[in-house]
Image 1 (cartoon, rainbow over the protein chains, first blue to last red):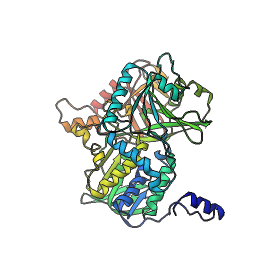
Image 2: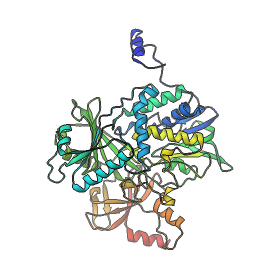
Image 3: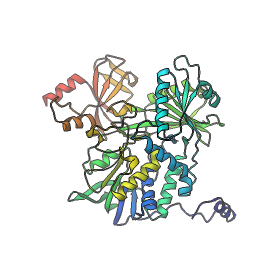
Image 4: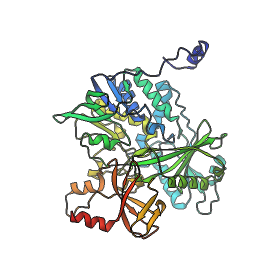
Length: 416
Length: 93
């Protein structure tokens, strides 16, 4: 069924009794052409593009919980393409372009809102670094503007401009950045994939990867063995656990990142704002809640809950940037587990096993990448060759010395 | 939630006093080791779920590097040893 204003009107007249579930709940078949492990944003996007762009529809997505129960439902919903490096920028710009046409493409309201993003800077050195990044973006054909203090003040007068230690000197502004309703991304991709014949199998945890003669033949799951020609992993947070079943050695550490939402408020924060003196980012949801977060908890963790010290630190950063925030009440906080890679950049690549494909290492920047990640991963699975915008995101880049270290922090995953 | 760490030199202290360096399991290869060994040391991580050994630096205390052994799912702390002692124990094995 196609969603439209007309369908809402028509269903309302018939008492809303005709709505169908957005996807089927199929039993697993004994064999698929492609199995995707992980029913989050990236897994569902991969299934969607496999079916829609590459015509491969005999596909199953296996999810151990419910669809979108991992990081796609736990992030701070920001989309942007303000990256400096050649290995990153064209990829994230491709993603932003897919976001711009996404709702029309998959016929689902994902509430894509290009409200603009302000990356604040607080020193001469930081301004120069942001100017360099902005120039790098413009060389790649991406929009970027360097705003001075007064231009920022006109957009966001409530910020703490005269902070004694970190006064706001200006911002790098990306007008096309913004936010998206994160759950709807999973639902929209899931529904689109399902409509094209993909089986979305929930509550089906992969417990083993069966191999013969060096090739994957299928997966052992909590719902029995399921065979496949190609196996694709998109199990962020648990990549190592799943990868170990196929003896993969990975440059990944798992860490927890927390996020927060305040009580609903009238519109106050019109943009996405990041604090250059800390690692704090904030936007306001359409429901009115201020959605914000900061750093990971810094120690290895598989728990989807975080430490109170990080909660306190996040609040301190927030109040330091927006003093008025001290009057708002925090409604909820939660944690998600991240694949922190050794250079802060992701991996979309083949593996030493010929029919095993890997999508991992998104650190805590995976949400904005969802469309491009799905598209490039589907391209890789369907054609056995890497998409040109993801060609730097190789598994062997660490060994070869071609890391993509956007922040320049070296091989320490908790600093990326 | 791993909020209190018992430093062998300073006693039980809040987590805020520490900064975390990362996995303690990888062993530094010899300077003449093959590139492959160095690649594994610098980049490849076991990343186990459960019992985990990690370097914590007591920056706001004795400034010693410590090895905290804990569960990264339940956050239970099993023990804290001075990193030098940890290395010696590893070498003796």
